[in-house]
Image (cartoon, rainbow, N blue to C red; front, top):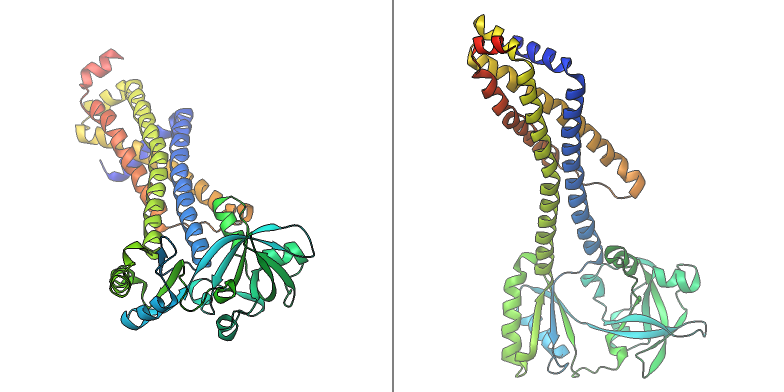
Amino acid sequence: MKISDLLVISLKNIARGKLRTFLTVLAISIGIASVILLTVIGQSGKKLINDKLEQLGLNGIMVFSGDFEGLTLADGERIEKRVSEVSLTMPFDTFIGYYKVHGSGSKTAVIFGVDENISSFMNMEILSGSLFNKFECESGEKVCVVEESFAMSEFQRTNIVGKTVFLSDGSSGDNYTIVGVVKSSVSDITGLIGVKIPQFIYVPYESLGYGEDASIGQLAIKVKNEKDAAEVKSKVISVLKKSNIRGKYFQVENISEYRGQLDGILDVVTLVLSFTAAISLIVAGIGIMNSMLATVNDRRAEIGICKAIGATRGQIALIFLCEAVILSVIGGLTGAGVGLAVVLTSKGITGITPELSFSGVLLPGAVTIMTGLLSGLLPAVKASRMLPVAAIRKE
């Protein structure tokens, strides 16, 4: 019996049980569509989170002084000179403060004390004006840079260069002139974690009253090559301990390392989602097996006649295996089509570009075919082992 004959017989047998075929194909379609959709959701979520973090521009190494003593601007200069892999260092202070505009009540803000190199550590897309320059930083000018969300919320326009805002740490404060407006990080973080956070306002570090030899709370370090961050971290610790007797209180953190750990967690989440959806494929496989076993019982006479006229056990088994595989392929193609259609239309609804990989479609397809083969194996073996006389006589 030729392969083409086996296929024709299998297709005719599938066509005879229309309702059974429809329900089996439906189960497989739902299974593979679920796998594709959940895989895309996992991959798209990972890409969205990484894109948001990339937009923030968080990278490099951060040095923290546990008690805000012992770490100075001079330590940053020493690190730049002694660690060749370091390109920049920057004092970095953050605290929850308050701001006032138009004589209104106080509102909460996250105030960053930085210097003119802030754009090297965080993405600062300038919309109006400019960032503060080196002179303004060194002289401690009362200037600041605000984000677009601040400008729109308080002034209903982006260009607010020259406007004044009163900034306070809760005990004392001063008026600061706005010299620049940058694209918002607040909206990105709010969208990422789903929690509303205060406005971000950036001021020159020296304007906060820190002198050249004053202790600083944090130091940001820019690494020339992110791949060297782990090695640089060790060298920075060594420099600090050699040059400062309070070095044991320093905590050095590799931001890039945290990004890698987050990627690993997101990969696990995506894998769990895919395996959860794959359970439906197992259920569909059980459905195929149940359907095929029922078919074997219904076609006893047909199997007996085929074996009586010379059909071998292998040919009988192949007929049932072909039916199982054909059902799997039809269900797989239908499910893949539905899944891809939903994925492609989701961008217009959610505004998020779906992340669809070739393996995200190919792997579920291969699993579907394997499910069909394994599900059809038991019914095929049962049919091939029937004795022709017993099968015909029982009918």
